[in-house]
Image 1 (cartoon, rainbow, N blue to C red):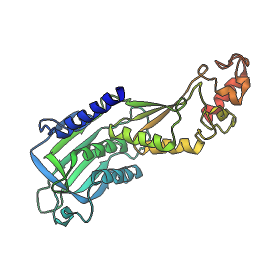
Image 2 (image 1 turned 180 degrees about the vertical axis):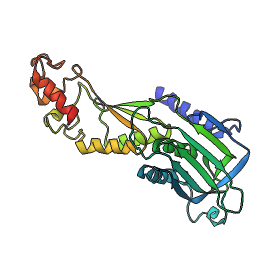
Image 3 (image 1 turned 180 degrees about the horizontal axis):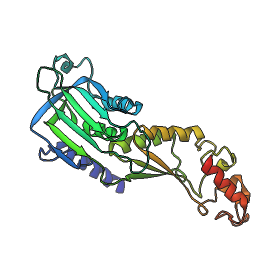
Image 4 (image 1 turned 90 degrees about the vertical axis):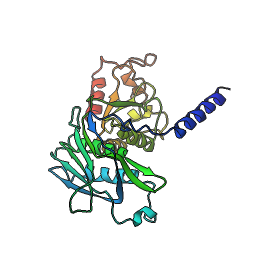
Length: 306
């Protein structure tokens, strides 16, 4: 009965939202920018939208990869055979990104502010331009996300359009820490699933993945200096290699997301003793870690440095 009611509620909610019309008085950007203004024009966006970059950090691979990802999202319904592509002139044909700093260090408090301008260019050029300026590549990524949210696919004209232009957006995060906790110590998740979660975090401009990777139930992470530790994993198939961890960290960084790993000590650590029983106070007392032994601190140091 509960399943039936849940299904009925889901269907009713879907019908309600799918039949509702967008309110032109609202700004459909998430999260809402700190400062913005808009107009009453509708601009078309070229499916062959090109990237022009400038500034010390403009040619960063983080920017180039980010532009490629968002271009696929913006034009996911467009094809080169579409009738809209037969048009000769589009209002927006270039996205220019200026990054003032080449420092790509990602840490808490990094500057994520950006300026986004979207306006049909006046003058002799037939190519319009959208413009993003940021102090860091991570601010530019947030600007890319906002730009993608402004782009909407028109199912009648089969064109990507930007409504309520011109747009002027000056934005910065209200909170320096905007995180999501993922507990893979109790519920193992494959690498691909973790990447999907990280990808979805970027859409909401979250910037910290709190990776609760080790707890009393399992120790799924490889530690080269103490190779028996991950014997505490649920199974040998539910583990993360060192290469897996680096891959996740790099994947997250490309999206402006810092990975903060949580390793509990001295409590919540029963799984440690599966590979190294000397870490337990006794066979019948398996936690917390035995802090009376130097070996315990050697292992902790090995994890922190490895």
